[in-house]
Each structure stands twice: as structure tokens, then as C-alpha cells.
Image 1: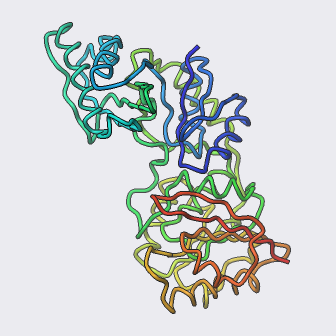
Image 2: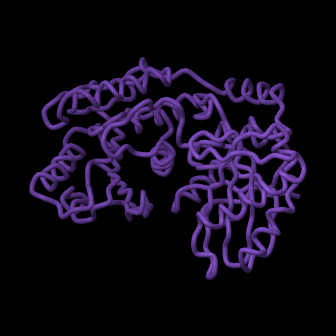
Image 3: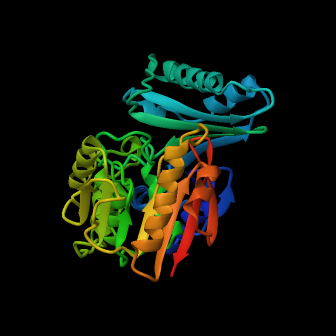
Length: 374
């Protein structure tokens, strides 16, 4: 039986595993994600629509021993590419390579590309074209030590691209990461949630999606699975309707954010409207230090600026005042969380973290710091 591979950001495997368990699927741990036994294509549709913390859902086509480029080329030619390229769709290959001899991942992708084109040329008398920006068929190459796997990327664009963000503020938080941080905190949607540094509103929108049991994939227009030869639009629509039926209404006035930059406020409001959540989310222009929130929160989460440079006096003051906000402006008992990549600044919060979750965000070693507030 085939196993799907569901990739995620390093450190999010436990959250992804909990999601899979709640959806009724078993899994085993892998490198940068989890393996899930393949059942049928409807399962693939459902996973792409419902998973909040995954990056991609990969359907393996062929696994083989790969000692060098010769093995890689031969292994790639074993796939029945005629099934996927009968109509000559454009394609792209996303490589992830950890191999002592094959150290250039782009070169490895080129070898697989040549194998695909050569086989198609033999069968059809023509070669498909590569389109790295908007490929019709997305493939994934994974090489670890001397084992290679070529997979069909059923997601296409990474799953963190929900479809509601048309533009973003400075250093936006990835949507799947925001959802994972909320789930790590045990957010259920019943709390009064406030983000005092909400930026383009990612925490707010992901919280509203969780609270309303809205599958994040419902906001997207296209997935890679649409180009698979076994794709069934009838079954896709059935699964989509089933997923949509899980949605519930949520009370207004439970989710709010504060943002000082007027331009970013407009970006956040536009994104909330795109997600059809503008009534459920309140976004206030101003500085959390001197503006009144629409309610007294009992759940506060923030991703304040932290950069990669040495923190200055203004940075330290910001973190200190975030700590003061948690202490003085929450409805006790309450919970707070700060996501930061700067441990020096984290000390300025002035609270003892109940838990510290280590997460790599864009190559930066970050912490989700949890606080119990009494």
C-alpha cells in the first residue's frame, strides 16, 4: 500500500499528528513530516482541504536506490510518465536532497527533468515544458542518503497559501504556522482572543477559521491534484460539500487585533473580508499601549518584531510593555503567548513562561512562550 507523505515546518509534527488523529488517520513519523497510509483519492482531497498545519500532501510515484546521478536518471525513467503528460502539461520539480555525492539539489531536479522529457519524447515525439512559476503538474523529489522518492505534489501551491492574503505587511507570519501556534496553545474558539500587534491579521483569521470549524482549503481555488489523471471532479465536489457542512457560526466580538500602521490595518481588513470573516474579526488602528480594546481578553497571542540584530532600547521597551499588558489588561484567569526569535528580548517580558515550544521559522530558532495569568 502506498503511503502519503505530509510535510510540515520542523517542530510542527506533533500538532500535525494531532490533526490527523482527529480526522481519523493513523501515521508514522518521517523526516520533515508524517507518513499516512493511502486509502483513496477522496482522502487526498480531504487532507488538502482540512489540514491547517501541513505544507504539502505528497503522493509517491516511485522509490528507488540512488547512489549517483546514473541511478537517479534510471530510477526516474521507471515512472509511467505517459499517464501524467499525455496532454503535455507544464511541470516543475521541487527538490529536497541530503546525499553525500549529490550535493546540488537543482542539478538533481534537472536529471529527473531530463528523464521525464526523454521518456515523453520517446512516447509522444515531443517534450513537456518546465514552468517554475505556475506549473500544471507539480512534482517533488526527495533524496535522503541513498534512497530517492519521486512524488506527485497534490497540493500544488504550499497549503499555507490559503487564498485570503492578497498582500502582507512586513515579515508576515505563515498561515500554517499561525494555526499551529494557536493549536499548540489549545485555542478552541470559546475564548476572547486579542492580538495586540496583529500586523496583517494572520492570527486573527486563523483563529476565526478554527473557531468556525472552517477548513482552510475551502478558501483556495486550485490544488495540484486537479492535474492528476485519476482526479474526479464529482468526488471532489462531494468531499468539498462534506467539509463545508462542518462549518458553524461564531459569535461576534470574540476576536480582535490592534495595529499601529494604517496601511497594514487596511491589509488586515481586506484579508478578513476575503476570508468572509470581517464581521467576526475586529481590527483597531492604534498602539496597544494607549488604545482601548473592544473587550477584556482572556487569551492574548502576539508575534512582535524581533529581527536578527541586537535589540535596542525601543525593542526592549516594546517587550516590557507587552508583558505589562498581559499582567494588567487581561481577564483573569487568562492565558498569553508570545512568539519570538529573540531570547534576549523575551527576558524583557518579565513573566515566567509555563511552556516553551521550539520552532524553526525561516531558519530562525524561535520560541512560543506560554504564560498562565492569574
